[in-house]
Every structure is written in structure tokens, then in C-alpha cells.
Length: 91
Image 1: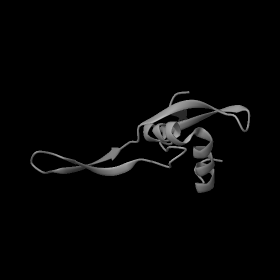
Image 2: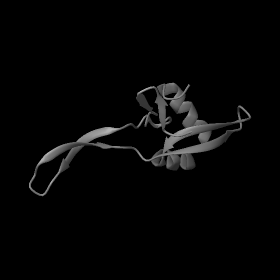
Image 3: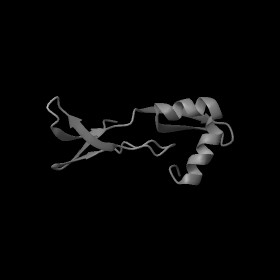
């Protein structure tokens, strides 16, 4: 599915939020050489990845940040999904 969905004249964008860590878009400034400041956004590095949950015997597709992917490699998918559900990032 494409990130931009057209509904009439409005364009809806899919949320850029990690489903495991809750990382989202941050706002900051572009600073030029002459020190002029203009607003900009810092987007998290998100990837869509399919994982197998042995407890539930099914696959789930998550949109996660690459730092969350490293955490999954370290702690395991079951522990990360459990933490995300406790914090309310994942249903």
C-alpha cells in the first residue's frame, strides 16, 4: 500500500510512529551558514517487517524503527511485543 492515500481533495499520510518503541517525528530547525533558521522535521527510520510469534502461532507485520530491530535481536520478539503492549504502543 502506498503511504499517501487520496480521499477527495485531502491527502492522508500514514503515521510515522514505531509500533514497539513509540518513536515519532521530531521538529527542529535547518540552520544555514548565515545562522538563519527554518523549521524542519526529523523522521524516524522505519521499516515494515514480518515476525513469527511462537506463543500465538502466527505472523505479525510491524512498522518498527531500525533501533527497535536491534532491540528485537537482543531481547527477542516475544519480550518486545509484551513491553509494547504494556506501554500501549501495540494492541
